Image (cartoon, rainbow, N blue to C red; front, top):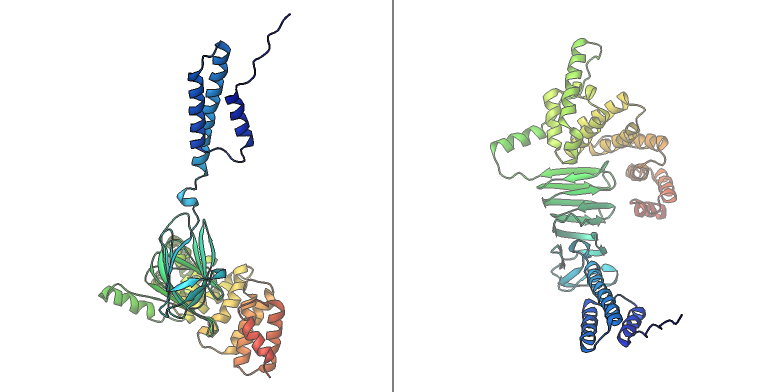
Length: 427
């Protein structure tokens, strides 16, 4: 049977095929449109037969599909606003150096603006650097000095500011961070938004609300939060007076008496409804202290849960209510001796003794107990560093140097490493 040979492919079809095979990347929409127009023109210029019509129809359909696919590829390849990385758009009063360091040039500070509207303002003499920039936001480190941050809120960006061993994590807010490495003091002032601060001597991540100021004295293991009132109203004055008044010293009633049991149960029910853990996370320390004043210290310490005792201890420490903080931590050790929090309470008792100005040997005893119970615990480096510092302050040079050697051996990059090296080198 005689067969009819297929006619050779048209030059236009061969050219299109070779073009697509040789392409190292998908063609642009404009290139595909030009190719499709050329194919249409060649088709209309000739007189195709039935078989040519079928072939040209397939070519046009394929080219149209490639055009649509190329346009879709181009659309998907464009980053959405949320995927665009944060980038520096301008630097005023200085230069951005290698490694992200900001070099001041005019002695009036440095202003850094970012492409999505965020702004950093470094005070004169401040040394800092941009540690990371990306889709998720940016990381900035203050090595010395003060900087103000006005961060545009965005659910896709998270910013953080490192100041010594502390980290301030934010979404969108207006705040100032001041860090002095020579005295190891941190100050954070929040004007708008919300920030969370983590670092040594903070038992948990600490959240500030607008108007609050945090001061941390690392060598003295002291944390203080103050709050700016909107106006000198009578109610605000009353609130301040009540929050600064000392609470009565705790004296636990006998648990065996029916009245004591009834009061403890009612207090436990009330505390579960108040939500102290959430109040602590929101910076509402005065609310926790007001609840204690209302219900009484002794029944509260006897009734509330393990987590609530820790929330109370933290709120009392932040407001410099050392007696109440000590009572809450001791109550936790007594009521929940096998809980991991009781081990943490041992360390926090040492801190509380320091803040209260109590005897330094008592603080050292608490730190020693913690190091025995949790030699690799999360507060081990801080406990050993504080012990070393207190021994030096007490004039026990040999014991302080032994603690410094131990610290450098176990925590060579810890926040007390500099002080430990100085002690080891001292005569």
